Length: 233
Image (cartoon, one colour):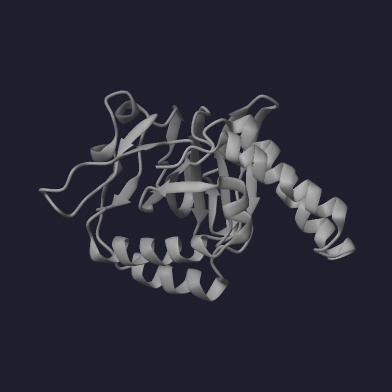
């Protein structure tokens, strides 16, 4: 299931993010790549522990926590703290798949490390499409390769199990935030059923009213399916 979520950040919020990112200190993105990914990854990234990365990442998390479409689609249990990257001067990221299990970062050296199962991946675009050439996110799906290049503030959500790549940026700079989500419902097809059902319930609510007997039965079906499929910690 590939879902585009518009206006996660407003244009004003994007401008504020960019003002901080434009003056930030970037590092070689290959430093954070695995042995295979290093061979196909050419970009810049912010240090995850940099104050600007933590501050902007927390703002994104607050926005997502109040975004009904994101909650409906992802059913998030854990979210990896948002990271930030920049592609320019021909940089790109060849075909790859994300790690299935990731260790959540911790600022406490004595804390027990917690793992995250990467069910979903997200890219939040922080540039307008006309600001750069190339830089398309290409995701392999059961229906062929889907090409994504969104407006600033818009986000795409897709299965982290997908093979995907970022095409080389031949002019300008592509700046984005990216992160992963562990869902309460790990199976993509089950999560898609719940999303379709939830969206249908929301649309019907505005038409028939929340006290409709048929709508209440449909809501019961949704929650019973969620109860059957959800795994909580």
